[in-house]
Image (cartoon, rainbow, N blue to C red; front, side, top):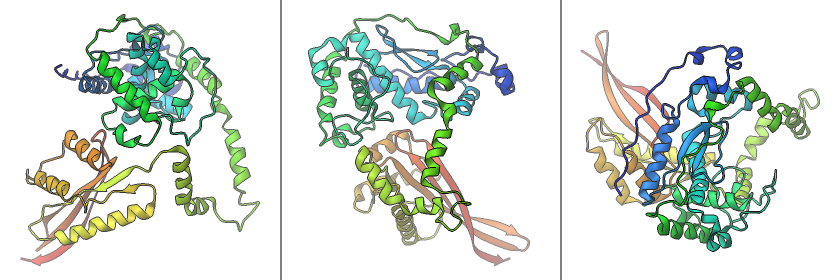
Amino acid sequence: MPARKPLKTPAREFSWAKLPKEKLLDLGICDLGLSLESSPVMQRINRLYQDLDKQGLQFRPHFWLSDDWFCPDHIPGVAIPFFLAHPRLQKLERDFVMEVEGGNYRWCMKLLRHETAHAIANAYKLVERKGWREAFGNPNSTYHDSYLPKPYSRRYVVNLPGWYAQSHAHEDWAETFAVWLNPNSDWRHRYADWPALKKLRYVDNLMREIQQKRPVIRNKRTDHPASRIRTTLREYYNDKIKRYGIDHAVFFDIDLRRLFAGREEAPKAEKASHYIRGIQNPAMEIVQRWTGENRPGVAVLPLRNETTEHIDSALNALISDIETELINWGAVKVISLQQQQGLIDEIRRQYQGGENSAYDQTQIAHWGNQIGARYFVTGKVYTTDERVGEQRRVQYYLFMQVIGVETGEILFQHKTNTTKALIED
């Protein structure tokens, strides 16, 4: 099946985007004139379609803007919250509820894959299958307002926060499908010794069975589209705050004060910041053991030498220093490339592409999956000559980047320099 070309996302300006907050809140959601096709989310939907293409699946869910993430019964499509359609609305959402659900690439893709699982289950009536019920349980069991997860359980995959797979049979299915569809999940290795692997294999076999079959339900219906929501933004957030109890943050303050005394109560006591730094590593180990969430893997790639000098030994020493700092930090798992000579050679061959050559996403994802890294640290060293009066100053520059394996996104970059020599003319 030929891959579909991703659609371009045209930029669109809205006059309300520059309104003061109080005036913006008086607008109805339907009056915003939002379009999914002209929103940043469309690029992520195109990426989802590419992931479905890679799995050979004919099914494509349709999407529309609404007031939340959801997939209605009997509809093979997904609603996406309207605030993701524009940066100004994302800022408003963050102002009121302190986060934007699906506001970054990684989180959004997790949600898109999760909701697509519900949509494909509707399209092919998968929950009616005996094998589905044997794998995930009774789809007709009651949805409870809350659930008590077992963070240490290996019977469920981990995709969305809160061990959401444990909340209901439908969510167990959706989370398992989401992990299976993620091209960078490496689920066969990640869940190799987990009982959840049986569910992943079931999804894999089921998708192979239906991949070229036409869906049973093929309607393009929507439910509660943003274009028909007459609620104002002010009403929307008043209701949201009330529903989620976001205005009750005082309870968190009470709990924190039980743990940490104020300066007046204990002026000579150890500072909370110092105490937390001191227990950082053992605390993270406990969390990892109970949640099954491993520290993300980080690998430091060979640094590119763009000088005319032989400084490879110095660059190798610098890599060792970076790895040592990351290990001592304790928040990540450092994957050394010293035993991956084949990979090092492959990376260095790419360096021969010239000064402006860059990694493409396919290579980044391939290398990351090969060694189990979620992030790469990379960089280069180069020199420049600068004239200062009658002197010529030779400068070393060190340029470093942190790249996300899954997206190829540059998450951090920094440049520093030092003077190598002052040469009289």
